[in-house]
Length: 374
Image (tube, rainbow, N blue to C red; front, top):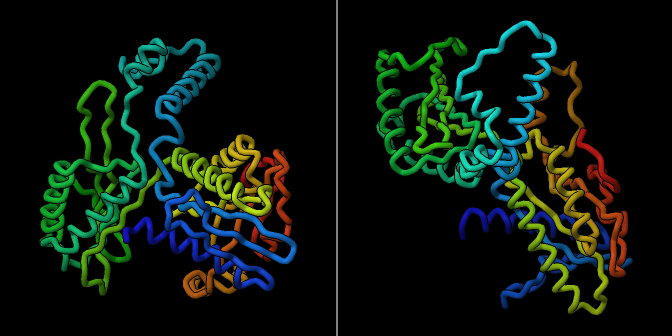
């Protein structure tokens, strides 16, 4: 069983437990052994049943929020407007910029699309695969017994080729060994960290190979940790919400729900989609909100889309109780699932409404009209 399948099954179990642990509910797992287009569950209450499909989104972020060229065109227009506003405020001052920047901002749009339209789009799934490779490699490397933690930050989720990885790992092992021997190279900026030295540098992992290609670099921070006996690697990535996998999973779920409904005694059963994200949404909730409302507008046979979340099942300590109480709360409090539920107000084709008590717990939020994240 691969990692993605295992996480998907865990999320399905969470949904099944969420309902079966509530009085009066049942959640029947539907048979998928014959490769049918069946959703995951038929969930029932004395007041009625509904169909439910759970989808786990593994590649949550990408280097561009949507299509790369659309994003670049939008950013280019924003920069143009900023320049126009600056010119209005500074009419007697001359603005000087490199030719490459001027061409990027003011070249013909068709030329711009031709030049930048084929830029690589990096996804979290690819970067996570690289992260696994790097952690396994350094667990068995010549520096594996050194008491350091290396943090790698990527702002574009670039996953290097095998040759780039091999070169990077070899360089990094040499640099860490030199630092441990007290001879850090000029590449590193040394900073104090909890009484010990911390080393920081940028590493260019990808050099542009063709016109329109862009470089990628990692921020590396190496810290010596007291009482640590093994070398550890932490990889942190950023990027916009990867809407492609969300849309694809919703489309597939809609087909599964509609196909199964035609075989039910009541073909107008309510149906919902539960989305579980393998990693956090980060600061992209507003983008997710807008996208899910859009998806509901396109699929008027879906009663709701629910986003699975987790939170501690106890009240947070007060500010007066201090940092220690807050950390104890975060690491020891039991966590429970809850949902942000988007209800479709424009159901069609005689689909029955979903009872409003389906997600009636003390944590979940139910939304009935488009609004921004807060």
